[in-house]
Image (tube, rainbow, N blue to C red):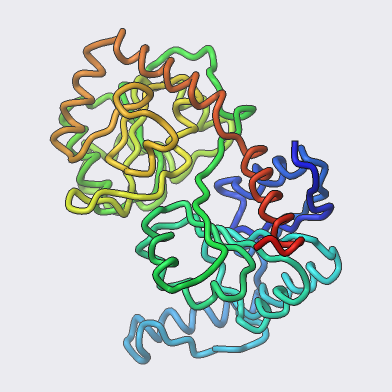
Length: 359
């Protein structure tokens, strides 16, 4: 048990889906902290939605301005300015002893600087290392920065920054759990469309046609591809519904958007724990950070490329005993492993070290 912890914690995330902030808040609450959540995507103005955003969009589409130009830069009712000021107001009112910012939020540097002076600010870069350039200039405003990708951590270390750490996700075992469901699908995939994912899904559809897909933009890219189009069941699935889906599936597939066969992948996403926690067999593309959470070949199945994933899927569907054995091993590891309570305890330990000057 953590001996000392912040009494008030403010958690900042992009939005409620996935419920990362809610899981982290529950972890801090288990230690006795009072928490607030700030979803930056939901904090916006009608002026930005109906004036600023459309004008910027069509100006770029018509090539009247360069792609990254913002015609309303600094406008007080623009999304970035508005959410930055709202976050600052919340922090001044709530007076948190710790602020934890996740993902890529794009707050103004002026507000980040004020938050840095106001309290202790931690940052968790829970995105691909490919997006590291987007946040490297703001790392100086954080008292401690964490990375869920070992490759992103290496990039930060090359900048000579201090107080850096590797922080992998936890698992909410109250939500992700086995259910008494009949397995009606051979495989499924949940996640936004991406060209790499399209290639893998098309290849796996050759192994078995009994599959379903949930995620944004899949219909847009497959409206002339009936083999995949008719297997797309929705633009998203969350909460208890996704837990039910996993339990109804023999093999759940994970395909990252930043891996490739030449350099491999880093940054194990939450599926690496959530699927095994449902006592379901996980088949994933290669990820070197995943081995720190689960053991490939024992607790989940890993494939280096599409042909190998096709072969692995065929073997798993043909061998019920092997599939159940991997699912059971994965369940035991995920259900007794790292939770968001553990993650909160790690952050509290670093917060205490920061507060007492040990770092």
